Image 1 (cartoon, rainbow, N blue to C red):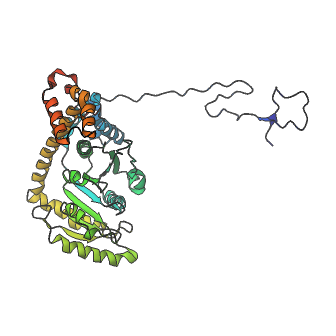
Image 2 (image 1 turned 180 degrees about the vertical axis):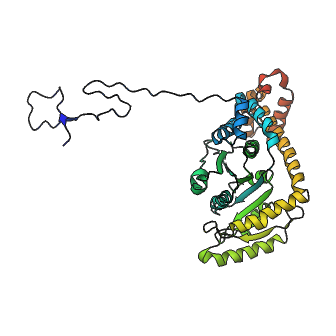
Length: 394
């Protein structure tokens, strides 16, 4: 039985009715307490080891040597909206640019529940085992309410995350497509510089993120499933027009026959849509991410063939040039957006103008005109805010 002792404050009449006993502490100390007996213990203060502050050259050398820890820190640096990090991040990107552009960039989208993450894990695992280095960039939408993100793809891709040649990075979109564009593109460049030859970019499958991801990858894959009525939804037409291939997932077991029927229906619809890539015909395929059946066939017979043909006929080279220019224009728009809402006169008059619109005293169009007039008469060069990071949101 565990040894106990009676406290010093026990009553004078110490009989069986007094049931209070105190157990002695664990020998050797515990819970941050020192190893003492019968004495007042003082907490053990752990030694805090500060992480080394990296220079631009440290980041560049670490990324080029495929140091995963430094690569992660470099991505965190470019994802930051703080002005203090912006200049250093751009210096890192600038020095790494000559080492980028040599990967296969694949965007993967689909409705929630289509099995995108399972498909990516199956494809990525097989590629890693075949000698490829695979980076997965999972675009995670930030909540419009809290601003936070779940960032759960790393936990869902358990098998792939154990591969030494795999790197999974869930990235919050920051609530804006502009933020998504810059951060995801620069993360992609860092991964390329780190030697990852295959970049898989997953979208959430809702909203405008598909168009954004389409503008930063070579090959765009739409993952669908049977029984969801996707083939009949007009809203899916826009996404289908972006796709270089459509794959019907979960084609296994009793569902395989339905998957083949669904594939035929998509194949029929694709005949009436404009092709997403010049000199390439989009087709529908089937696979099972669960059993891996058809996954590597899709890679070898479709994606690799697409990349080989695209580089040969110069379509991919022209696409990447156009994507880079679109990136520049998107960042200009984001910069102007942030400058507008940080302008002192806009901040000063914003509530007043918005209240007039809410009360019905001012039409939305005239409210916009008022905002533009105020901004146009603001001397940008006279305000310190104009020289802050163009992507810092306050």
